[in-house]
Image (cartoon, rainbow, N blue to C red; front, side, top):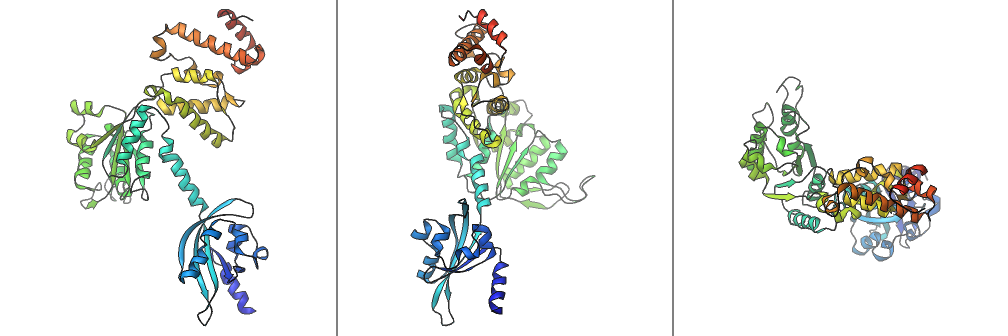
Amino acid sequence: MENSRVFQAILNSISEGVMALDRDWKIFSWNLAAERITGFHQEEVLGKECTKVFRTPLCIENCPVDRALSCGHPYHDIPVSIRNKSNQIVHLLVNATPLYDVDGTIIGGLETFRDVSHHQWMEEELQRQYGYETIVGRSEAIRKVFELVDSLVNTDTTTLIQGESGTGKELIARALHFYGPRRERSFIAINCSALPEGVLESELFGHVKGAFTGAIRDHVGKLELANGGTLFLDEIADISPAIQVKLLRVLEEREFQRVGDNRTVKIDTRIITATNRDLYKKVLDGSFRDDLYYRLSVFPLHLPPLRERIEDVPFLVNHFIHKFNKQMGRSIQGITNGVLEILENYRWPGNIRELANAIEHAFVHSKGALIYPGDLPQSIMSADLSPREQKSSKREEALDTLERRLIVRELEAAGWNKSVAAKRLKMSRSTLWRKMEKYGIAT
C-alpha cells in the first residue's frame, strides 16, 4: 500500500499526463496532469476504456498504444486532437510504449501526453497573419504577385520588394519566410529610416563593450540574431553610404564585424529588402551604390497600389470585417452598396493600410449589423473621386450625383421613412430635407 502511494506521488509530480491501460484497453492509472489536461478526474476514468475518454477517431483508426503493442517498441510525439470534458478541442503530443511484467510479457500499454494547444494556436495565428491567405485579392495584378512569391518561396534569393507605403511589403516578406525553408528560424525586421545612422549601424551589426560612449556591454546585432533565418530591411533606400559599404560585404562574403571589433562573424541569413521609393533613381543621382543595388535586386518584386487593383476592395473589406469582428467581439455582417461605391471611387493614397484603418473607424461608429456611408472617416467621404469617375462628369457634379444616389437608396431601403433614412445616413432629419430639396428628390 505504501509503495502504491509513493508510485502515485511520483506520477503526480510529472508535468505530462500519464495513462496506463491493461490488455482490455481499460485505464488503471491516471495522474493529476492527465486530470488537468482532459478535465476528467481519476475516479471518472479508472476501469473505463480509453476511447470513452479521448473521443477521437484516432482511437479507432490508428491508436498510438495499439501501434506500440503491435510492434513492441515505443512511438513518440504523435499529434492527436481530443475533446476534453467541456467538449473543447485539445491538441496533444502523445508518446506510447508497451508495459511488460517481470517475465517480459506485455500486460498493457503506457501513454504520456502533453497539451500543445497553445503552440497549435500560435502556429495557426502565424499562418493567419503571415500566410498567403492574408495577401487578399483576385485581381490580375495581385495574381502576378502570387506567381512571383511562389517562385521565390523555396529559394534563398535576395529580394527587393518595391511599392508605395501601405501596400503590404512586410507581409510579403513574412510570407516568403514563413513558407520557405527557413520557417523554423527567426524572422527579424528593422526599419532603416526610423533610426539615426550610428544607432542603425549598431542595431544591424552589433557592437562590443567600449566601442563608443554608452557601450557598457557587448550587443548582438540583428544580422546575427537572424542567422539561419531571414533579415528584413525596410526602407533600405535611407541607409547611409557607410552602412551601404558594410552591407555590400555581408551580401558578397556573408560576414561582417561588430562595431569596435576586429573579429569576423560568419552568418547564413537570407536578406529581403523593401522601399517605397525608386531605388534606381537614387543610383542614377549617386546617393545609392550601384553595386549594392544590383546585389539587393537579384529578384525585384513590385507591389501594385490599391488604386490599380480596385476590384480587390470588396475582398479586402470582407477580410477586415472578419478581422475586426474577431478583435472587437462584434458581428457586423457587411457594408451597404453606398459604402462600396465610395470605397471603389476613392484613390487610397495610404493603400491597404488606409483601407484597414477606414474599416476599423467604421466599426467604432457603426451601431448596427451593416456599415453605412456615415460610418466612414470624413477624409474619405469628402475626398476627390478617382480619375475614372471624373472622366464621365466634372468633379462637383460627380459628388452631387453620388450623394443623391446614396440618399435615394437609403430612403428606398427605409420605406421612405425620413427619420430612419437620416439615421442611416448619419445626418439630422432637417439636413436630409435640405438635401432632398437640393437634388429634387420627391417626398
